[in-house]
Image (tube, rainbow, N blue to C red; front, side, top):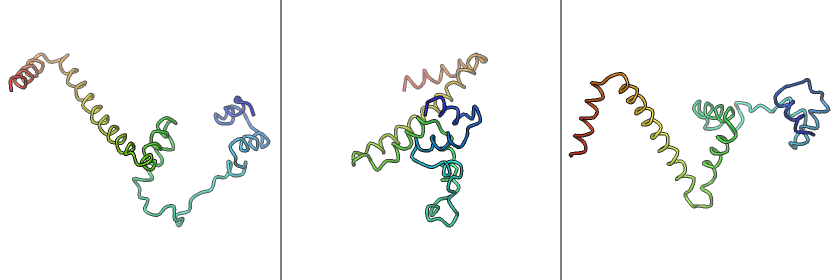
Amino acid sequence: MSVGSVQAIEYNKWEVGIAKIERYAAVFGTTADRLLNPEAVRPSDPRWKDLNDDHLMIARQYMKALKTQRTAVEVLLVDDLAGTGISTELAEMVLMLQEDLKLLQLWTEVLECLEFDATFERALRELIEKAKTK
């Protein structure tokens, strides 16, 4: 099956017959029936055990995420990468980066204020000077 055919199926670029769908399914080790009628997980299924609305929301976001983001999540969730603690360290780095991004956003807003308010800029500079002398 050519790359163009796969892309046509994935992006719904043209009408695709069952023969092409069967070949597409074979490439991915499944059947056309499973592609066209995926198995739904019933509420009574044990795989639902201990899942709450937050888990389902995250699962839906994971499904919509870019491949790079999904791969990163999978790396974080792997069993501690042979006991090295790397997964935990990576998770902590992501959380620190999130905090850094919040600070960056805050400073961006402060800098936007500086462009419009000279009094604010003066007061901020005085605070910075006071902090340096302590």
